[in-house]
Image (cartoon, rainbow, N blue to C red; front, side, top):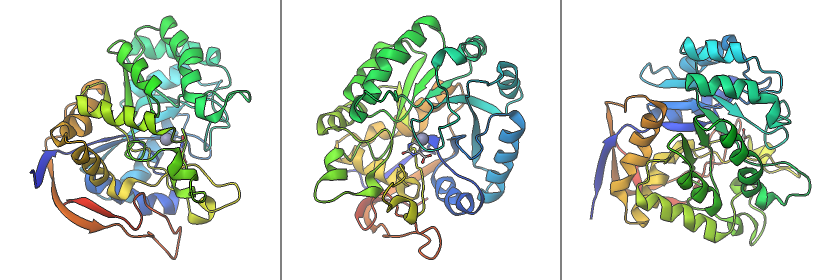
Length: 344
Ligand code: DOR
Ligand code: ZN
């Protein structure tokens, strides 16, 4: 039995860091584990310009206070986004990627894209310069059941978009279904996906059985058990098209435990330990380094981190609350014992 695991320092390819006091609180949890993170732009107002991304990057750097951590910035696509602005940001090394939120799909997505055709010009430009498109893959049509939103997005939006832009680099974010696994596997090498720690562990029963569990609610919402099992089976294969993205998305307790609770699971504090636990349960700990530390950089054309981290087997207690006197955040695995600890 492996009792210690040393791997290249991982990166988080999908993360919400927020801003202001919340940023100061949550960012150090990520920097403790990860070398880099792709930072989501869904602030209020969203990050849509090079200057806004630069300023946000500086705020993140000062919140983290550790120069080894590198925030990788993204621009929020709107119907009016200027392709020149996005291309300039990429050229200047400020913008790593662009994020597509279908308008109304999730938290702070109201300025998102109302019709994929509106962003065809920017997608054409991104395809030409090799800038990745990060996709929140859910349709928002009122007639589509929320549990089918991802599957329908693949058919109605992503497949035709890739037909139109066959070389566009796409990361399908936080996948939750067997259909998404199959779609990405069947697509070209320019299409990849991220998988969260929580979608490898929870299904919709965990949200709804025995009382509603607001801290397990996120978007895309966790699906049936068979979809979780598809994700778990996939990571055992070591397929390099799938890599780590936590989608850690903190909201204050008052916003989660609410008659209209916000979507988002705050997984940053014990993220790598959670993934390690899952991979260990699946008997594929040897696949963790590729998933967490190698496949993401390879897709983005970046070197893997030189440093390493070490995880040790041994129980640790996850607190029920973080910042109880302030935002009062409930971390993923709150109150549970985790079988792995990050020790260095
Ligand atoms: O659960 C989610 N929370 N999903 C998202 O897509 C956005 C995120 C957030 O920003 O809170
Ligand atoms: Zn997200």
